[in-house]
Image 1 (cartoon, rainbow, N blue to C red):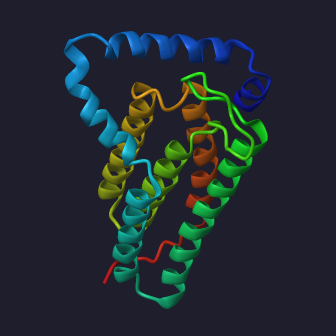
Image 2 (image 1 turned 90 degrees about the vertical axis):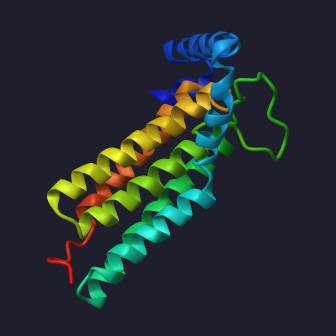
Amino acid sequence: MLTVQAALGAGPMVALDESVRDGLAAFSGASGPDRLDGVMHVLADLGGPLPGGIALTAAYVFAALRSPGRRARVGLAVTAVVSVAVVSLAVVAGKILIARPGPDGGTIASGEWGFFPSGHTATSAVCYGGAALLVGAVSSVRTRRRVYAGAGVLCALVGFALLWCGYHWLGDVLAGWALCALVLRAAARHVPRPGPPR
């Protein structure tokens, strides 16, 4: 639904996109919330490939050190790499094929990528969500729940920051989350559970 409306540039989601953009612009333009701009830009930057890649790599190292066998370590690595690759390919394909202009109203020049789906949203979701899956695979149920919740909150903050800063439409962010939800759900079924940690 999101993809069709983004491609057509019409529909209820497009109208909602404009309402959210205008509402956040009016709110962030008020004198009080100016202090939030710096924080929101930092949060938006957490959706980049470097912070997400560092978090995913650190989670893999942690999980690999607590996994008892080589097979489990390889399985964890394959799960992480395949998840990131699938999301990256889908995001790039969507940006090229749909070529949706951003909230600033600028046009997409020839050879440039569009804004749908949000790459920063997808990167943060697949990297931090994947990191949570890896850590959760070698942790207790209680710790796993906390790590999953923390990753979810962080991804929500990144998505909101992208909207606040005017980098993406709401539909772009929702599409990034939807894509990663599908990929991470499939990854969760294949994450090796190595048993008791060493």
